[in-house]
Image (cartoon, rainbow, N blue to C red; front, side, top):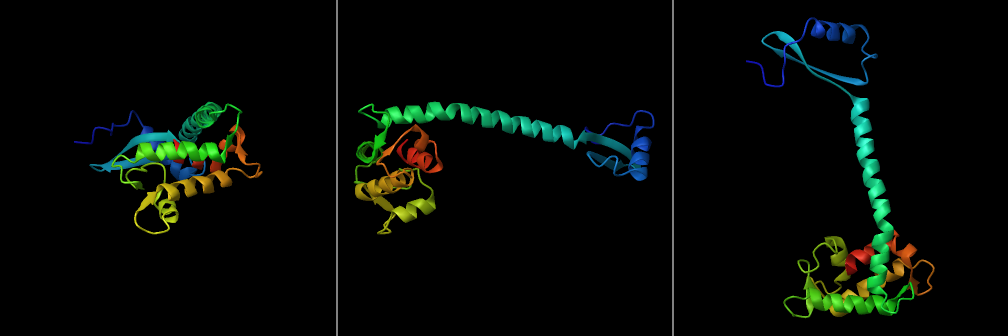
Length: 182
């Protein structure tokens, strides 16, 4: 009994496909022709165009890219509003550290004055955590956490004006700071 996805050929389809493949393999190069020998008979399982698959992938990626681009301004604006208590349209280091201090207290669920990897889940990868932990005790105290925030703030502030605007928060360094402070 052939597998469920194997159907017997209609007419001479298999013979025609094999003939085309042997006569002009380059003509069928964009197509994937899979044949299976089941009980000494060839059945064409599927003929799928690589072009169609590629178009589908491109459409999915384009949709994803457009969605991300469309939500980026709203995301950075909402973060700006969260971190900007004086509503001047920018975030300075003092505002970022104040938000970080409040976040530290919220994340420190066991109230031991430190954050471990579990408490910082999703905000730092292992490499960044190790770099932010100079005493290598496996935790970040509030000063180490605030030093990390300052380091990421400065990385997101290429013009060194002491403030971050929505445009700077959209950069990779700005998103890194935002991920830490989310």
